[in-house]
Image (cartoon, rainbow, N blue to C red; front, side):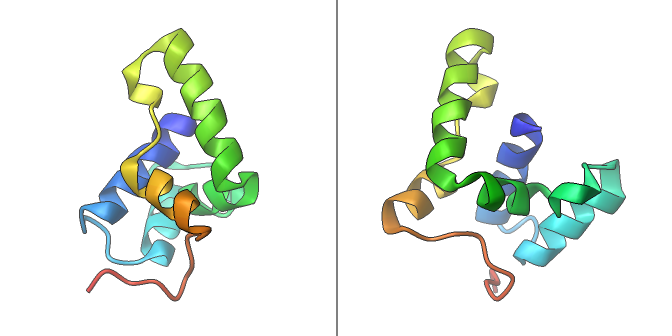
Length: 90
């Protein structure tokens, strides 16, 4: 789930998806991401950005670069932000 969440964050960062809601719903209906988590970006929020970053880095050490946290997650954590449905990349 960490790789999927990271890739969704990158897609949001790069305007592949334009809203947090689109990323979340797309993950659930598009490839079956665990719906009880509310989608990939909500998974990051629920875990907490700092905890997500810490665990992602642990996984990266053990399993490789693909687990490194997306830059947008690092930037948002540094600012104390979370992914929000009112965010939109227009």
